[in-house]
Length: 130
Image 1 (cartoon, rainbow, N blue to C red):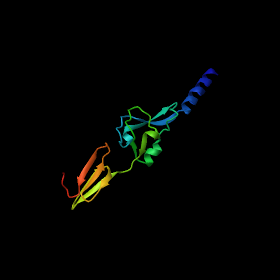
Image 2: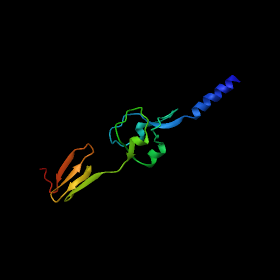
Image 3: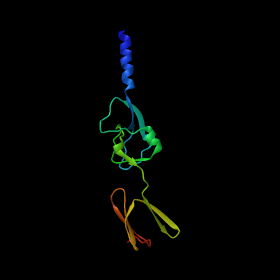
């Protein structure tokens, strides 16, 4: 009888485990999530503030991290945001240049772009540097 109750307790503990995604390697700020850097792990409990990201979410959408994530950390929905491609394309005749960032200011002479790291770049429309 004791053996059966011990077996039932061990099986019930495993059945209450949550399957979560954990980072195998660390993720940088605004890095796209890749399946190769993630693994599935069963855990008993998760912090109240964390809603775990599921494998289904990763398959349906592309995500970018909101901050640096250490390896071994559980991925929560508050730690990631959906990926939106933010790039600016310049056409200088037959030459096209694409830069990552968003347009802050534009006039007839130049365009100001804010990059992901926070720096601002000024590009003249006639192709000159300064």
